[in-house]
Length: 520
Image (cartoon, rainbow, N blue to C red; front, side):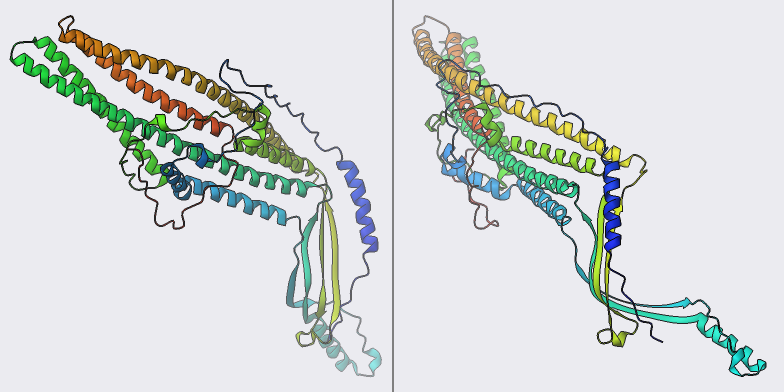
């Protein structure tokens, strides 16, 4: 026999009771764990240390150049493009951004209810309660009435019940009454934005490293040519001195002195060749170019245009440097986690609802059916959880204070980095000017020493010492030029790097670009 399914009465009284319980429990839970006071952030200094005669103004506008405009060179631009396209560490950073974006999407999805279609069928064997069956008035003899009554009782005991239903259902959905889910959603979004800023910071650091390595390659190439030229002159001098020794015009000491200069220059040349190989290996690692070809021509560092980058106001670093923005977003995410952990002390409100049709026979589900609905609000507040919520709040507070300290550290390091690079650029320019004057004096000294030796006024040791000093000064001048240009790259990176669109990637990742004219 078919048993009709009856719907429940409207849940007005149930909803009223739920709201009343919510008000009572909310008042009790209002004494959740109080917020710990947050340490105040250390303010930035008002200005950078001023350098007399540096020509840099603290209130000047910040640069808006792109990396391709900082040092305009086709070879360098090709290396930068290759680094952006093929560097595996940068791809890992990009995938971390995608991971954080997906995590933020998952968290955002929790703020919306889940709605789905549901269909189910249930068949169950059940025990039914016994009804009072009385056959004494049926006019049957006792010998027939008793067995018949027992058979009816057995038939009523064992039954198979069937229920079929279909409809729309909304599983348990937490209503964000206290803002806990919103706080978690905002924290996930801040973590995603922080990962994007971290990727931008890594990109800036990568371009700065590629540019500085390229400048180092130019420096080593120029120093290598100076060393080869000095070695050629030293070998020619040694050949002449050996001829003069053969005819008895000089002593063995003077000949050994020329051999010392040749051996010393060869040792310096070998050191430079080793540094060139290390520089080429670094560029290969950064750009994934299998072999960086040697340059056909030499480009002196003195021909590369230097720029004066005004530092701007210290507070502007907060809006330009991606690492500072990332640390700030991480701090905001940590604060959101603290808010969510504090809201966990309040009662949670969940709602389960659904509606559809039901029948006790599958063939009549969509014809002879009955409408059903479900509305089930629930309020829950754990009374004893072993200290889990308090421990979770303490953990979130500790991570927030750690993010505050990290944020302050990033800001202080950024200010120190800019101040040091401003001072470095100023004093490197002064030092380069002085070394240039020293090189002119050393060149004159070497010329006069050779003239004095040829006229017999001094020994060859004076010539040897003058040549060594001039060679060392030439090497030092090239190093200072590269250090000044590297300070330009470092200052540009410290000020936040390029704020424009990324460099265009090569159209075909399978064929890396060739670096014609890359420093050896």
